[in-house]
Image (cartoon, rainbow, N blue to C red; front, top):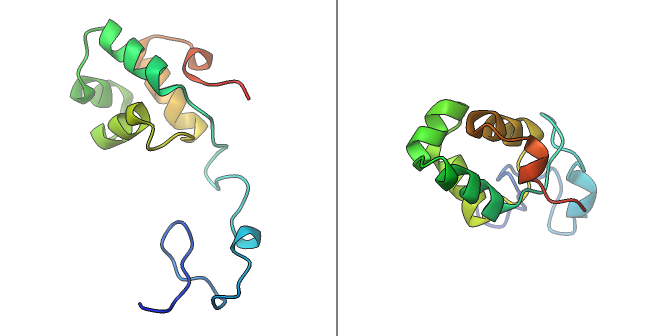
Length: 101
């Protein structure tokens, strides 16, 4: 749809180009708080166990691409339940995978 203003999720916004986009984006994700994650710590924990992305995905119940995006820094603030699932699968505390801000 050309000429339409879209939100970060790709849905059209209810206003035109003059819309204040910041005011319509919620500060917290509707399905849980967003958590800054240390991509290097996630990768170190995974490789420390000798696991592939596929194995980590299978044990955490998350898509393989989610694990890859987090490790590459493409998803710097995943939902807390995502971080907890990865930590549980890797056998580490969730706090070891997060960045204190």
